[in-house]
Image (cartoon, rainbow, N blue to C red):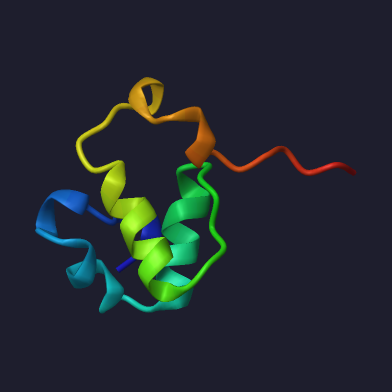
Length: 69
């Protein structure tokens, strides 16, 4: 399964998302422009918290800061 096709509607809890593993969660968060660090549990909770939200409805604090290059 590719991270871009990860359908959050298929998961009923953040614990269900934890089964995907750190790297899959990181990639799914990055695809959405969200912060991708933290523990497995933190990543799963962050991703689950945006379930059903449009990009405009996601709290700004969840977005990753632009990298300085």
